[in-house]
Image (cartoon, rainbow, N blue to C red):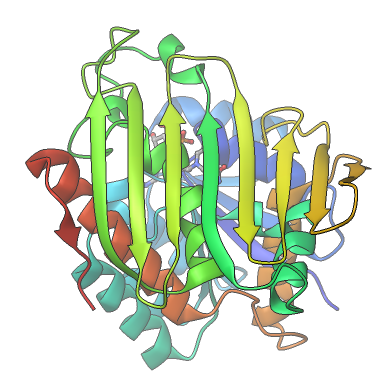
Length: 333
Ligand SMILES: NC(=O)c1ccc[n+]([C@@H]2O[C@H](COP(=O)([O-])OP(=O)(O)OC[C@H]3O[C@@H](n4cnc5c(N)ncnc54)[C@H](O)[C@@H]3O)[C@@H](O)[C@H]2O)c1
């Protein structure tokens, strides 16, 4: 497969991580990078990459086949629409959008343009998570009953108070768009569309006025609940567990996904002792980008269906509403 030629938009924390990961893959090549901040040019220069200040410049570059968006959340949907309209494949960092209506607009645009869309939910590409989803679809855990999951970190304590990632407009419901969204995405992978959510966000242990402690209970149309926990004022924790009528499986991360150190998977089947497997580190974000490239080249379909991308954002929007209202909110369909 010929390497897919990428433009990466947004050279902040995550954009730089992805540019450097892509350099390890023969399936992808970064050819153009963009940031509105001229200070980012030094990063591009060090790596010998073409730099410009506007997405439009990358879209006018005939060498660019696909665009990776690592920009603030409120820009995602409109940028996906612009990239698709320019006939380029698009990988959008999470969340795809902040409202169901915007997610719908983004999905319609990629549908119309016939381009590939991928979203930066790399947890789906972590080998033990792939195994849990395989166990579920093979029926080995029985009927899925409940998800319990936690994704917490304290990286944001180092951000300036006016950073966009701490703003209620760009990041409603405290930790939700930073980490909770990955767990909601996995819950949608297990159960499908959510029906209602109850969410609570508090500021308990930090100066983060947008909230540092989040609890979500999501109920799903075809049954099952997800109990999602995300905090920004405690050291890194990553745990995803699914309980089923025949057994359960739990994945624990050994380190932050930015520099993975591997995972422990425990699988417990009724009547048998729990099996514990250690997984070595794997570059899940890069595996996600390579799956995107394979889909753009029509080698293999992107493994996350678009209905699930939409279902995740519908549930996300209900989480925002519930965090504001303090009540159970119905998820739009
Ligand atoms: N998948 C993951 O695990 C993961 C991890 C971290 C961040 N993210 C996501 O990555 C995205 C970026 O987050 P971050 O923490 O890197 O933020 P950041 O603030 O560190 O970086 C954002 C960059 O985008 C630039 N920018 C803003 N508007 C722009 C525009 N219109 N055109 C070009 N550049 C623009 C800013 O100057 C900044 O350099 C967010 O969607 C975030 O949720 C994903």
